Length: 360
Image 1 (cartoon, rainbow, N blue to C red):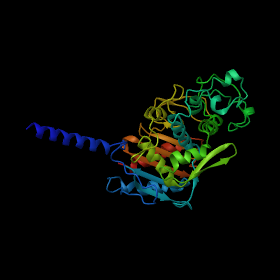
Image 2: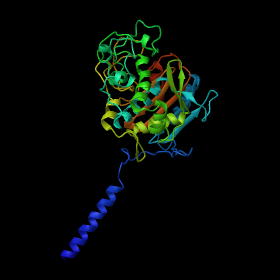
Image 3: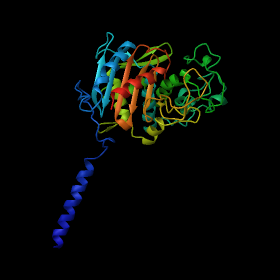
Image 4: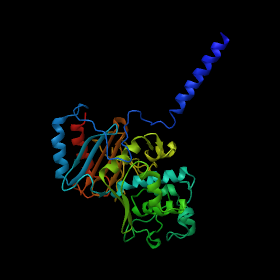
């Protein structure tokens, strides 16, 4: 009897060990589908099977088409429900992400920190070198990496000829870091140089190696004046949205393993603008601030959208929406939808009015 019990114990032990080995780095959301990284194949699911309101589909399509949209996609559980191309655009065409691409930089920065190349609590001078601005050395050393990713560097946005300019003679002291929020693009763009200085590799190459190629994205960074803007097809943006929906894990491959960084990235990063994380816009907060403004507004950023929505929002209404509670990724690429804002705009709320009518 003793021998039988010993054998049974060994069998149970081996069984448990085998089960554990099969759950290394499991997807955080077991219901998600991930398209292959080396193929155009992508599973689909019909709106009818999801009990969505098909009668509202044409109204959504017409709204998008009439507002200069070029590409629009909805993923549910990672599968394509809706994929539309319009206004002389096709699946293989590429488009710019504008500031929605800030989300790419945020995740790349997190990977660099996880790999020990930098710490977001370090002074930026460690990676940009001295005299990267026109501040005194003492002032310059008070600006940390985290201030760049939260739009709180305190650099002057009022008395510069170009808020995109990253030259040292465009960067002046205005406020102490962390004491004022303003959507100043130059400090964000400097993150490319900062990551390059930290990892000893061009930012673009590091991003390609650590994120783009691992999840099957296409696309490239292209310099436009001072701005470094990502361009890709619509499906590549959808892939990145799916990665973020699964909190940095692509299928069973961990892209960003630092869960603390990820959670900080997609939650309020400071008290000045509740609707801003690490370069991500956040819905469902009690107040928000907008690009180009110093005012604070009460209420949600996008009243019609789910409270847990996180978003990459770019100029001329480039949209990357991720809704964890619904396992949704929604993207919109195209020309200005009507207001020409740098990030959030009234178009978000109009679009979500149509989406709510369509999605059950």
